[in-house]
Length: 426
Image (tube, rainbow, N blue to C red):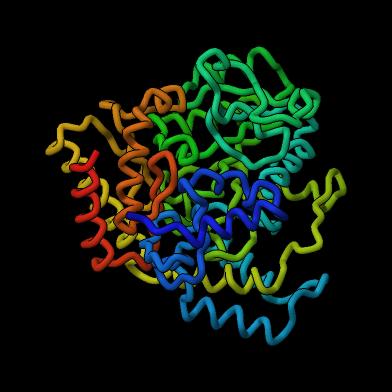
């Protein structure tokens, strides 16, 4: 069984000074007792109770090259010896921007910020400045950060489908009154919104793969149809690639699906565990910053330490075979889960890609959106995950798995055994 005595004591201490005892609400219920980590190396975490974990959560996505990667560590420590930050320009920004333009199809210009939440707001501001319009469309179950204008309809109940509803308290309706929510994977529904709001939609933003809502894949032609509808109605198409960027391919969804949205957002895997984000896309849209139609600010934008980390991470991910290895590892886990489910007569399905996927118990057909995902048997999924945790396999709630470049055959052998044992135990 999982040892948590020291984590429990630290959690109780934390609650006396740190509100809720954790630094982000997502961490509250990852494990029955929030686990306090002590150190990490490659694809492994080690907590204060001495448990060793194979990490398939990757800090909710950023640790794509694992912890303590020698090339990433060297890049950061060399920059630390030069300066922490400047509040001025430096050549590292040019180097990183040029790498992004080189590696990501049809990216002509980029701007840097610090988090995925910021990047989304930058993209929306650019779209509004470019179009002169105020409204935008987002999709049910898609997460675009915690700002009030986008933290809506992420976990809707059936009676809330088709409405724009806040996810928590402290969200005045005025702050999301220009946000229109649409079911995902339904071009007819999106087309209807454009008809109902003629000349008013500045942008449509969505995850190209709905990783946050169950790793639902887009229907054939859906993403291109979304882009085409935006072009037809003069709106900006935005792929939120905070998760999929540099994870499903070096060029993200643009490369993976061979598509060209107007703008894309990046964060998480971009810097291998350091905080940075970016927006990239058509040069014409970024002209709004040059001619003063809108602006982009941030004290830590282009921070040299994060820039150095991002540049090194992209170099590591550019090596031959990295993505083939990640997808092969993840697909082997997916196959193991599906076969173990059949042997134990458990109805389940896996969805997504090799490097980011979900396991859904109780479903027999691929889910297309969050309305389908909430039909899954989450109780059985939670018990399966609990059994994996007891065997030292750390993945995320809701059946989410992330695969990184340091996951090897050694880890695969151990996780395959843990999956078989955990499936038999539920």
